[in-house]
Image (cartoon, rainbow, N blue to C red):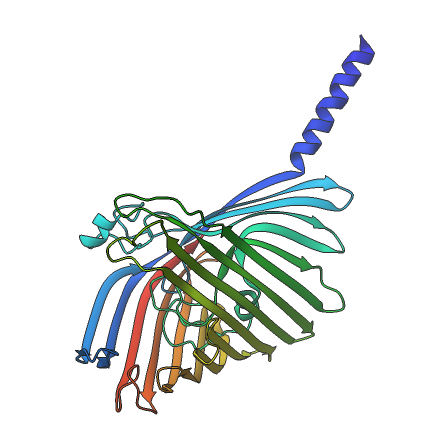
Length: 411
């Protein structure tokens, strides 16, 4: 009897220990406030000769996610023993000012939703394994190497406002032309830190090759076949030496869609023998560094992105730029930052359009506590034309500035 009681007690202790080695954390950010935007849009001319006149637009709204994207996340870790652990993250973007959580098109039309995606956005969802002293591997929707490299070398820390060359935000919780932020259908590996160095790599794959079958059709129906291939890869590294931090990342994505439609007999009305889709290679790179002087931290970054046609490599669009910045605590509860940079858009194919741009951003945080702060941000981005084309008409220029005040709470 005593042996049985001892066995039950031992099993209970083991179960309790195993349970204590597994943990789940709920976390998130809610960022709301006032956002104002002044935009100058240039006139445009299409290849068909249609003209759109230049215009100015001013927007004022009680918005969200100006400094940090609002989110709700769950992450967990389980100790598997022997220095091995399993981990997961499931993180979703929130729209705290929306009347409809699902972000329906009806809510968009009535102005009660700013979520164009029709539901919760999957920011991150992955499961992985980690071995202490070696590194980790995870599979799912994850941040890319370039995004991770840039996160530590931008003074604005990825604020979602215009004014940053590295992180081209637009004030609504999303980013534009800088780089691909996350990749789904991806496997991501990251090493532990060795002598100050840490490296990572990513591979993405979602490929579908379908054979075409020929069959009779009626009422304009026909079989289709072809490829829908989305793949990508990326590499990243960072190095820390005393007060110096250096990070770099490079990634390349390939998107190919092609399909042909065939049938026995005459083609349906309006159909063509073959329909070609998107064929594009998107190469992205970033290099940056920071140095902590004690009273302030200095930032330096350079980024480039080139999208090239897979059908004709002489057709491409390129964006490149550089940025410097500083960030510092003025008092124990007041933190400020400033950044300035410039860059260039260039394309080839339909003429050779080029445009230069200049951007700058300033911001400040007043911390009410470790989790809650008030903020104010102002940013501007102005583009000037340097060549004549259908994309950048002669003399056309564009510009945008944004300002925001709000409150951010982390939990």
